[in-house]
Image (cartoon, rainbow, N blue to C red; front, side, top):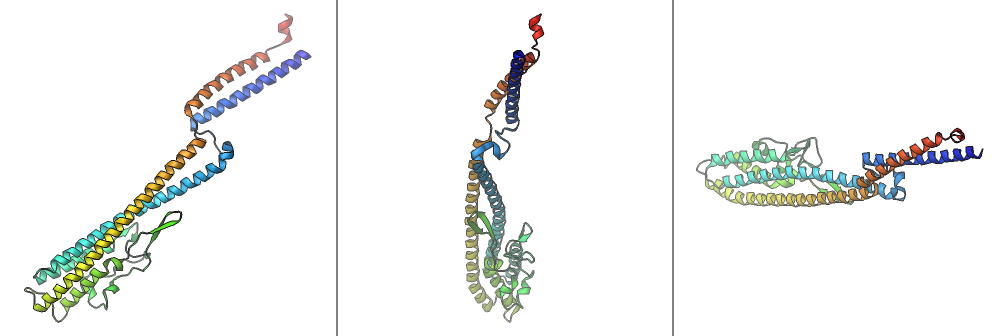
Length: 305
């Protein structure tokens, strides 16, 4: 009886050793396969709360980075549109310094076309300069002559007065939109004055220009120069925002890199160490299995022979 009890205890001990070795081999194999120390928050113990918070922070930083990327694209499109408007305004400035009436009106119409097209630029399905309106283009007219019956050039604009904003950090939002009436208001007023004069009693502009026409254009040149100064200021303002958004994006990328390292320290396995433990566990399984097998074959008959 004592032999039977001793054999049973030895068998149980060998079986427990085998199961322990198998578990260690499985865990090491899992780490080698996934690269992770654990597979759920329970496995990291007291660090679970820190790991959960780090993952949330990483997700938030990623969302802000993506918002910054979209904002960069919008501001780049806005910059291109502003440059086109400034180029058109400069062409208008050059045109009204000439003495050729037909050329002046031809260039004025061309500049009007360029300005309205740029102000009606769409990006991601919305009009860049319409404020928060998405249903109408920023400028509601398509021909220079449409300005003549209007009481003011402001009537040409259909934007609202709300500039789109984007949240780029937890407690920081930035205005990304500009309004057509702000950007193009001065140059549109010049277009209207020129169109009104051309359609009025002292028009149309002809070659050579009359004294009244020359006097009008001399005054209007200063207005166009002021409009051009405003446009250059808008280009600079947009560029400042681009630089600011780029810095915020860089900060969010760096934050993600830092958090990723933090998470890695908590949950990533040391692959060389895991490989060593796997080999050791594999050897332990083989030894335990052999021991268990030999114990199962122990019998009193072997000793009575």
